[in-house]
Length: 239
Image (cartoon, rainbow, N blue to C red):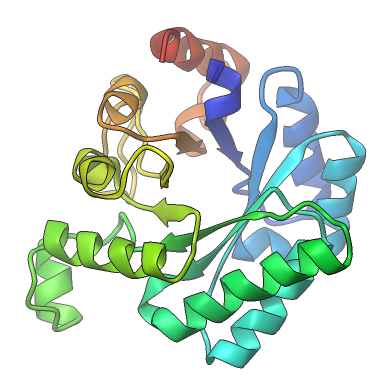
């Protein structure tokens, strides 16, 4: 893939107008934009429709996590919205993920619509080993827990997972070249870490096996955002 095909730019803004302004700023350099819960709650499906009108793709990052029937119905809605990719939370369990994967497969065939990539969130990159153990009560090491959840996602028929770039190498080795790995927690060496705790540079994440890099404030908060994005594209050229 070309560098621009690997980058997913996060629309970390709280309203429709600001989001479209960001898309217009970067539309010549990025093809996939991430819509998270804040923006979707504020703007609803119209932000997706407008980004599609601008001939760009959407990663809908709402991390669906509910009973299987509810998540399956939400997955159907996401598929009908035409998003390129969306996610569920793997902690919702195998049956929840399986039903979501099955409903979008059936829907794409019955309604002749493109099947979105469905990926599972493993452990948020804002969570470290101490939080995992002391607050969430999970006794496994971080790497083992992520690997376990990724295995559930693959067994359920998901296309891949969202995982820390630190876990990408192990996941790639265990689950093969066709299992998508989408990595947040991407910070160039010249950008601040912010609230992310498990981070790597863009180049290092790709070296470890990531397919897509989710990048937000590391670019948009820079004095020259477009220039910052170009620096990242130059850094990952050749992967």
